[in-house]
Amino acid sequence: MSGRDDDRAVRYLLDELPAEERDVFEDQYFDDAEAHAALLAAEDELIDRYCEGTLPADQRQRFEERYLATPEGRERVAFASALVRYAAAHRAAPAAPSRAPVRHALRLGLAWAAAILLAATAVVALLGAQRETRRARAAQAMLQERLQAQQEQARREEQRAAATASELARLRDEAAALGDLLGLDPTQPVRAAALALASGLRRDAGGVPRLVIEPGIALVRLRLLLAGVPRAAYRAALQTAEGRELWARNGLSPTVVEGKAGVSLTLPAPLLAPGHYVVTLADPAERRRDETDAEFVFEVRRRAP
Image (cartoon, rainbow, N blue to C red; front, top):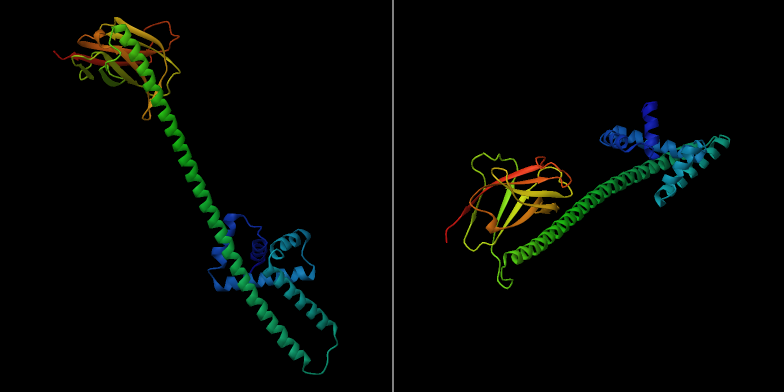
């Protein structure tokens, strides 16, 4: 290993590398047996430096947080400390003309072999634990995102259901009021015709939406679909094709039904003779009647009894 590689190895062992650099380091060093062995040697040197007391203070603190927090780490440090003490004592003792140096060297070699084996096992276990932790955190984050998405969807569904219920209640009240105006029997069901309209058609254009009013129809319900961001409220006006205003109402609030924003109107069916009509939506505060946000064109036809 070069000096720069040694520094990276120490930073890796002390968990000081950023996440992306750590992943690159693992792919580089653990896919290659020689690089793996070099990392194990760097770890042995790091442990020896700790036992010899030559690590800087900040690295010493990181080392203790990493290696003295687990039984395996403490066992490796204790083993290395014993070897360091043994080596120091052996250097201090006078040389003796016997086979003792050979026996000491053999024991030291066996001890280092055992230490390397233990270090390899510990590093593999540490890396496996780190990867499993990252996988668990990624899975937890994915589950959290899914849960938030489901909660948001449920919230939107609740809002949509509440808006639909509110719209139905308003239409029932409006139908009852118009029924009183038309003198309808409240005990009898009121027949109504409905039509959804989108803006953008010209008054003189062909192929406009058609509303067929059958005999016995008392009410007409129009759903005016909005484009873009809706206002808080609108003024709606029903006009003939010539621009003569037949009916108007202020303060109509848009509602969302099945994911689409729109304004709903309920009109008395007798008001609509066969012909073409235009419904305009505008700002309630706008005094000029020609300033409109949207126009909705439709045709009325009546079926003979």
